[in-house]
Image (cartoon, rainbow, N blue to C red):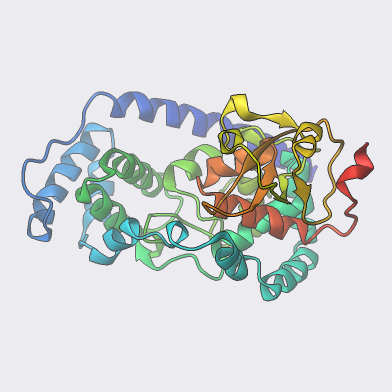
Amino acid sequence: MKFAKIFLSMIFVILVAGCENKSKTIEQSDSTITFDKPREERYFSDYVGLLKNYAKSQGINSQTINVAFDKVYYIEHVVNADKNQPEKKSSINDYLSRTVSQERIKLAKQKFIKYHSQLSEATLLTHVPQNYILALWGVESGYGKYQGKEDIISALSTLAFDGRREQFFLKELMAALRILENGHIKKTEFKGSWAGAMGQNQFMPSSYLVYGLDGDGDGKVDIWTNMSDIFASTGNYLATIGWKEKESWGFKVNLPENLELNLVGLDNDKVKPVADWLKLGIKQSDNKMIIDTQTKAWLIIPDEGSREGYLVFNNFKTLMHWNRSYHFAISVGMLADSLVDNTINIHAGK
């Protein structure tokens, strides 16, 4: 009975979110914002006036607009954060030392045991393995500890005003307004990261509307406090964009000196069976379980000039849809691997 209720709820949420997202896309193609003043803080209030008019043109009701933009403010440090994202400046090993530390792995195993029931239900719903759902939770928010304290409306308004990625943040702002309008969360509780990411799985507002999933059948999608919804929504995101249930993400390799660098990258024409990569002199640097050496893989090198790389599979590209960062996707994969005990050597697939 419980799973039937959850299943019906899942179908309802997907249909409603899909229709809402489609409608939103059509509406936003009809108009945009033209702002001819300098993008300086002193003109922010003028821009907010245009945002209110734009929101109204997108079908957001006046009450929501008034509540959302009440006491909205410019946040200089979110603009600085957008211009100086740390992943662009640290090596992969430095990044992994933080995101896949022994402390975080230990905590992951503790959380895996504590939330085994909710994780299992999310996997039944979405067919995404528990270890990947938990790993995303860990990397995104430190298992819910770091959800962000920025006012979502102010942060997204500031980033749209900055202008460098105006259309992207404008779209997310309209999605955030719809979240408020639909009563998913109160304005006073609507907090998140500097970029507008929300909840324990750090969904952008548009992702919440499209992929948010009611994991326990209570008719709500709460990614802030409800673990069943958090895990189900995470799994639903991956499943919807093409997760392959029986495939891994990839593994670390050492590169030969004579490797042709034009083979590196995630372009579709650069994929080869693992066996072909091994023939080119690429060697695994750690034990890793895969189905067989005919699995199609891409070669990536996160750090320019490094002799260390990764052979990655389709699921890696799926993780890149979540966050277009090699560092991010590798850290999620490695944290997920730390929760799997039965690893075997790559050559065991021969």
